[in-house]
Amino acid sequence: MKNQKNKNLTSWDDHLNEKYGKIGTQTREKYEQEFESFKLGVLIQEARKKRHLTQEELALKVGTTKNYISRVENDASDIRLSTLMRIITDGLGGHLKLTLDLK
Image (spheres, one colour):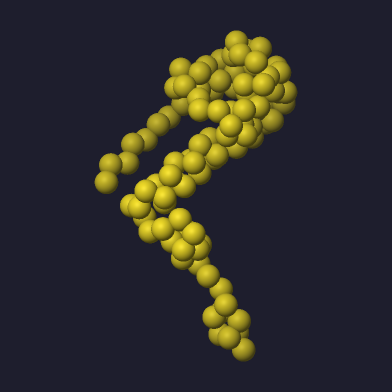
């Protein structure tokens, strides 16, 4: 009975392949880039909340607006590297570490 239930399950990779195409296709690459941007916004929002800052307080520390911080957290805005660094260092008191994966 357990095996019969599992036949209706789809893996996350299969779901992504079906919805966005296989890895390497233009549609899938676009999805992957947008997902990374989304994750960045979530990370910033979680760090801000951990520091008990409002969007407005973070914006004041960074020299931007509450509206801009909101757009970054909700992935409605592309963010410049210099601004990202200010948000992390000046606003959140952290350090930015980047990695680069080459295929």
